[in-house]
Length: 192
Image (cartoon, rainbow, N blue to C red; front, side, top):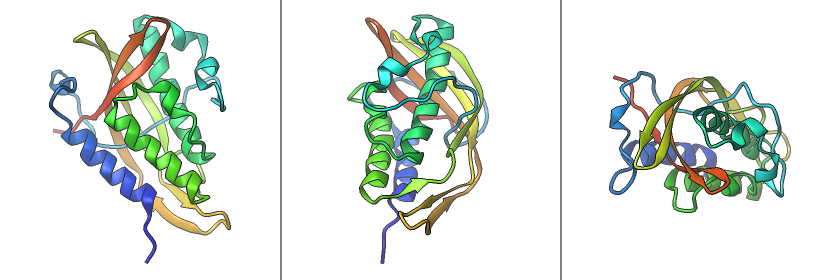
């Protein structure tokens, strides 16, 4: 019986993000609504490998509230590209190497590439990205969007799995690393 790694990775990510604790930032200051998933709609440039960081739009390269929001949008767009191409080189340049959430997202990109599989359309779309404050030197940015109904196909075009459409609500913790943003961690905000 064949394993469906992207689905397993998505479930693992949901559990990982919802259950992160310890020294991770505390998202409890956010009290907004919807459930788990990923998203995208407004981004200007397409990341390509190598040198994803060099493809970041100027608006996402600013150490400001607007810059953190633009970077979050760019990250979601990059995630979509990493999973639809697939390309395992995109996400590492955008993440802190200690981020458990980024590692889970990256595992999916690697798994898709290794198995010659890909998403047929963007798995995520953005409704809203909004700055939510700072905590312990990190910028918190809320992402509300949709995990799109999207299929994963193999190299022959056979559907391996299909993700359902679901609302997404993530809280990004971003750090400014002297000249650029990095994702420090991502948490899923549970609906209440």
